[in-house]
Image (tube, rainbow, N blue to C red):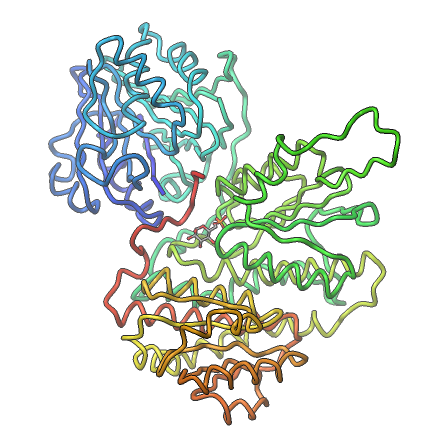
Length: 621
Ligand code: G6P
C-alpha cells in the first residue's frame, strides 16, 4: 500500500526521497509525488499518476525541486481514482502545509464541512487533502501544538508526514494504526513507513508508537507524546541482509524468493531444534494447561497458514483450534457482543475470548490492519497472544505477549512465497512443541522430516521446468479449479490465490468433498483442475473426486506423494513430491503451485512482482 518517506538534512532532499520511494515500490502503488520546503520557505509539490519513473522524468531527477527537507509518497488509491490530482503530497489551500498520508480518515466528511463553512475549497477527492487543510486552519505557528490539536480530531488510521511553510529545517510525523519509523544517519535523518526505505542509509531506527509526534531535523529526532512531553526511546538496530532488496540476477523477486525458500526455512527452524531434537521456541512460556480455547487469525495467505496450523494443532494436541480471517473475527468478538447479566445466579459461561484463550496471529509484515485490530480486541479480554511475524519490530510483534519470528528475510514480491513456507515450518514446530508440553509422545519423525524439507524444496526448484511446461500448455485457460482435502485444502486455496494474484486467471479452490455441491456444474471439456492429494487416509476419496471431474471433461493435474503411481491412471498429468511426514506435506506441495502462478504470469507477459490493484502490506481495513 502507500509508501512514505521524509528527509531532513544538510543535503538536497529529493535524491534521498526518490531512492527511498524506489525501495517502497514493491508495496504496490498507482501514483507518486514529492514535496520540499524551498530555501525561500515556500512549499513546492510535484506529483503524477503512474510509476516512479514518470515522476523522475517530470522533476528531472530532482533538479527542479530544491530543498533540504522533503517528503515523498507512493499512493495506492482508496479515496478517489489514481490521478495526478489525487496523488500525494497534498498542499493546503493557503499553501501553509503539505503532507503525505497512509491510511483512511473515517470522519473526513465532517471535517470537510467545517472547512467548507470557513471558505476552504478542495481540488482532489481525497481524505488526505482535508487533513492538510485542517492543519492549515488551526496552524498557530507552532507545528507541534497544531498537530496535537488536529490528531485529536481525526478518526481512522494514518501515518502523516508534514512540512510547513517557512520551516526550512524540519519535518513532522505522526501515526495511528499504520506503521512509522524514524532513522538516524550520517547523511541526515529520516522517517518512513517501512524499514526497507532506509536500510541503505542506516540500521539505527526508532520504532514510533500511535499518537507520538516526531520532529526531525538534520541534527536530531525529537519524539513527543500526545501531551507534548518528550519521549525517550532506545535505538532499534535493524539486522536485515541488504541483498534481500536486490534481484541478484533473477528476472523477478518472486522467482528469487521461490528459490530462497530452502534458506528461509532452514534459518527459521534450525536454531529452534537442538541436536537431540528438543524444540526451543525463543522465550515462549505458554501455560497450556490453563488454555481451553485456541483461535488462529490472519489475512490472505497467512490465513491459509492458519488453516494448516489448525489441522496440525488438532491432530497433534488433541484440542480443537478455530481459525478465522482477522477481518471477520475482529467484529465477532468486539465490544458489541452480548453481555452476561451480572445478577444471573446460574453457571456463567463466558464463551467469548478470555484469560484461558490463546490467540495465535500470523502475519508476514506484522502491520496488517485487520490483524492488528483483532490482536488489540482480544487483548482487551485478557487473552494470551502469540504472533508469528516476519518483520522484526513490527506492530503485531511488539504488541503480542509472545512473538516467534520467521526468518525469511525481506520479501519484496507482492505474492508471498518464502514468508508462507517459513510460517508453515514454524506452525508445525509450534504444534509439536505444544503437543509435547501437553504430554503427548514426541513425534521425532516429524522433526527429522522437517529438517529434510529445505533440501527437498531445493530439488523441487531444480525441476521447475516441468511446471513451466504445464503453465505454457494452459496459458490461455481462463478458469482453473484447485481441490484438496484435509491438509491439502489450504494448499489448494493458496495455489488458487497465487494464480489469481499473479496471472489474473479466475481460479477457485474447493474442499474436494464440496465439488458435488455446486462447483462441478462449471466443469466442462478441457477445464483445468489441479488436485492436491498427499494425505494417505484421504487419497482414495480424492481419486474418486478426480474421476468425477474427469468424466465431465476436466483435464487434471494431480500433485501427490512419490509412490502413488495409481494417480497416473486417472490424472492427465502427475507431479510427485518426495515422501515426508503427513503434516508437513504443504511445505512441498505448495512449491509447484507457486511455480505455476509465477510462470503463468510470466508467459502472459504480466508484471509478476507488482500485480494490478494489489499491495504487499494491507494497512487499511
Ligand atoms: C496481502 C499480501 C499477502 C498476505 C496478506 C496478509 O494481501 O499480498 O501475500 O498474505 O496481505 O499480509 P501479512 O503481512 O499480514 O502476512
